[in-house]
Image (cartoon, rainbow, N blue to C red; front, side, top):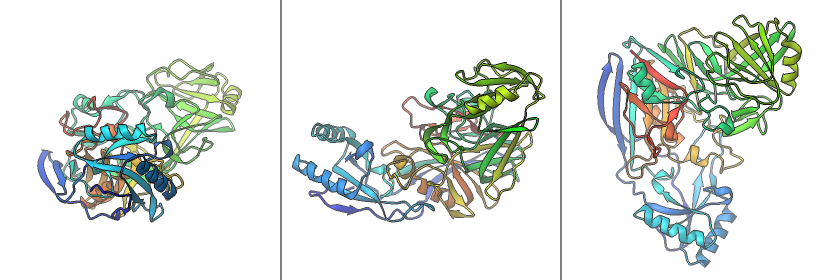
Length: 500
């Protein structure tokens, strides 16, 4: 972006950018029906630079017009030369059109150190600045984007594709480490997961997951999911919801969680959640009256705290009842309740009583999705491509909020490392990563760019998987992309593994 010498209102180029530029691809076949492509998307006209962005309230990167004009005036009075840039809404399927907000910036610099030096001076004048790389802006083309793509053709591939959490749903493991242990051909990271003990049990999935035909976590609202049926030979993408009901005799109670801490719903999206029942990315909602089931795959200590607990054997018979804690018995399960759910467990969970759990997963058409032992599901958000058309439903799936333009701005509207999955017109599974947060090396994708990229590959359906520092692809057990975390590849929740 070019520096200016006066305060101006710069109208950013429309975000309906040109199609994804062609990449120079390197292609290799790792097994019959499994092809790996590596490429770099280049835009020679892109001239990104370092700049200083002055943030609005709450460190938001954009604000209202009056805030932008006032901030620019204060900057000018302090001796700086600001510019005001208009930021438009991306072309999502469920957000407004036109102006999203206004951004205030100072200068254009050749290096990060120079930008940081100016940022420090801006901060001394009472502002909240940050040194920014304009290559992450959606309003101009990225100079470089490093991509990796795996194409799995079910007509020629004789192995399986599955989502897996490793040995326990409460563990985290690097994608490449699990791939090496499983001797997989290709692996990518999967869905969202809990990273902090303040939000639940680290490693547990924050969204719908099914492993080997067993429900290991519940959906957060209706979000996109990659369904790998028949060992991945029949893959599809659909928005899925889940319900689980506990029944003791004629009495029933809704189970609102599987393998998570009662009262804490990462990414929200469950009935009775506070502050919202809708999906909301990276927010932990609370539920006062919460019934949660724990399966044998929860191989760590159970959550403790107020409430009640019953332990069930393999036939669903109550073998113990009392305070929360302990572990899930081999072949058995555990129910924990808080609030009214604890009262129900205490009343109905007498030793010897049978408590049956009924699980139902449905797609948006209302059809029930049934599982076999070789089926798996990994979910994330949002949908990128639907019916062969770009259809990013970021607001519906809770990765941004049109009423609060600052929420999810960087997550959805700035370039980030991302992992994506899609199905093309020939029924082939597409697994892709783009590196990011590497100025001058690889900028990453916005959600809209991720959708365009998947559509350029021929995807008829596509979704966004977990990204950021979690984005990873391994081939023959070795990491092939460059994750963005300074510490290197991140340990994640579930993964997608292509197994010989």
